[in-house]
Length: 444
Ligand code: NDP
Ligand code: 2IT
Image (cartoon, rainbow, N blue to C red; front, top):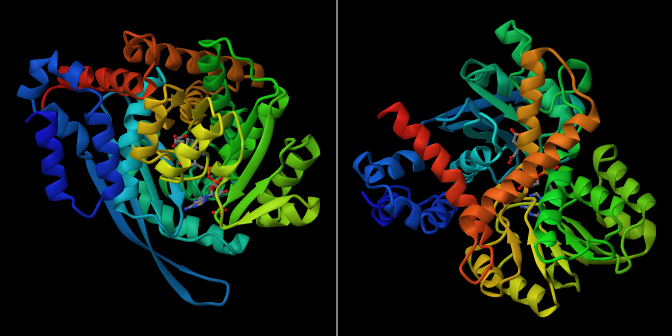
């Protein structure tokens, strides 16, 4: 089947999986040229095999809350493709989690991991468990119940989970603890672990820092300096806060941050003290971004997103489809020159179209946010060697990897007029490596 037949067939077979179909369509419509140069791919029905996950586990997770009530959630792990390395990708805990979302994330992860230059396949997992308002003990019991089921499907050379929305160092610690008990082994089966038990320095920072490093590479192609630039960030979780941290170090101005309830607007940019407050608010008190506005008396848009403010750069870092066509047009009208995605698929297809049409610098998540999984790969390498590298060493490797991903995007995405289509560049580069590996390994 050719790629448009595959897409139509997937639409017919999975009509209730819009996010999955959206992610597949974006890739298939940008790799056509590369695909057509290799007639053997069609003979081996490679595209269809690459779009459908190798396997999916789904299971019930039963746990007891603090009031003694029995709660039931769904748990999943999508093992998408392991042609270039063990399945690798995060775990998401959010009430919206379903198979469509996890299949889109596992599909994207396969291409992202291919771009990192490290040996990692693609996977993703999670649960519709809602961590908001849960006590520490409830989080622990849930993580243990989740891993009591998941543990037999994962392992250091099989499938290596990590964090994502709703899953940070605390949750990885509890999941790793349960895994270690069930499997009776202390191996690098999770990444994002605590430093004392095999975690890597710079893993918490890696996605946000990596996104800024990618942005610097993009800005350099046009000779633009980051200093003094106004940046609108969405989200206030792991990716958003470390993006802000690096931007502040570089003298940029972070004018917005948000959560699912609203957006704070600080036109002159957050101070270091204010950012430290947000770190504490989110990681220790687990509060809402509204409390920042109350503390500092800044503007707060209840229920609003950041994209209406005046900014030079947008870095969506919360969730999928959080920036639509209207938002994109507003950003462009306000003079936005670059968009670099910390989240996975935060821009809708219409928004992506607007950015590329306007020929601004636009980096899709699978390139720009690959720093997180890259340092996860470096954590796996350190665990395998039983060594820990210094923060400087990991940060240097992260910078090199982001520069390499940027170079791959240029190689495959540069148009005749000189404009770089990073979507095409990332998709073709990511695809070719996985496709060649699959061809070499036979029909599986
Ligand atoms: P966190 O859980 O730490 O933070 C998520 C942030 O996004 C919170 O501020 C949250 O607000 C907001 N958010 C989540 N869902 C929604 C929603 N439906 N609508 C509006 N806001 C929402 O997650 P991360 O920072 O780890 O992840 C953010 C994004 O980055 C995700 O797309 C993830 O897949 C991606 N990513 C993460 C990596 C990592 O290493 N952690 C690596 C690469 C990509 P609230 O608290 O109100 O829910
Ligand atoms: O989307 C992602 O790349 C992540 N959530 C990080 C995955 C990982 O294995 O570190």
